[in-house]
Image 1 (cartoon, rainbow, N blue to C red):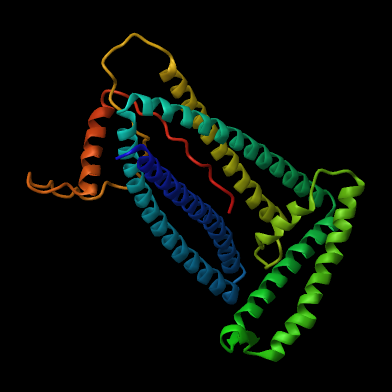
Image 2: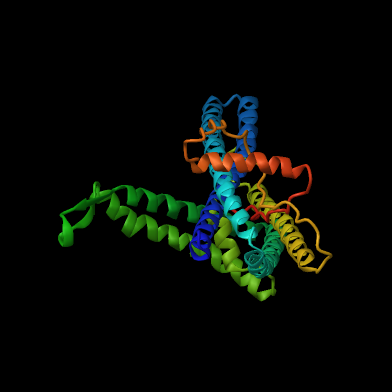
Length: 355
């Protein structure tokens, strides 16, 4: 296979791998949020039982059942994506082996990977800094609304108005109905009267409520030179809010949830930054001239299997041409033997993103 074709395949595999990783990060973030929601609803269930509130108890049990179902679905999707990642990584390892068997190509690959890791490292460091700053701003906002209950009420009003607007817009979108075809097509609403009420009355009221509560909060922040942005408040509101046993907005739990999510992100950035630093060090070490010796076994990009290896397909007979998956399995077997002689180079991982 020529270098150009090899490189195109390698680039495509890496793109597929990165896409799968992002999907897994999104699923893992959703799983973390669901786990937090489950804790909240368990607390509500206990509260409802203590108060002998059968309606609230039934609601909490229903929510817990829904959350368990969603968690199971997320876990299944995550497992499938990790298996897909393992297969893509195996394909990448095969291509890297072919590249590294040629000294000139190996040198070129090291140069390319060194630049890539360096750029990625700078990007990760900047993203980590942004996450740290955002966490600090949210922590300041939490302290602000704790010290000033009136401003806390403003924040609750913002959270409520944002949810109302999202719910109304979702209801409106659900009523849309396409009429006509081609260039003459347009949309109308299944319930025109309700749509008219949402568009001309309810949405404007929610928007006014949002402005009424945001204006004094932002005015106080600006007047006192606090490091809190309007975007921080908008993003917090977009994520929804937690409620207490009585159904009231719990600002402390709401903000702790977002701060915890940022802490997970920062921890992920730290891990990924260190992995990229190690990868750069390994490339630099390989570039140092040494006394000629028998070449070490090729070290492909490793990946930690998230699930048991798939069933090994049968080896072809001498008259059969090996299938690509059989070649990958042979490569896996060879890689396991190689690991007993040399440690693999770490593969940088992308940090857990925010949901």
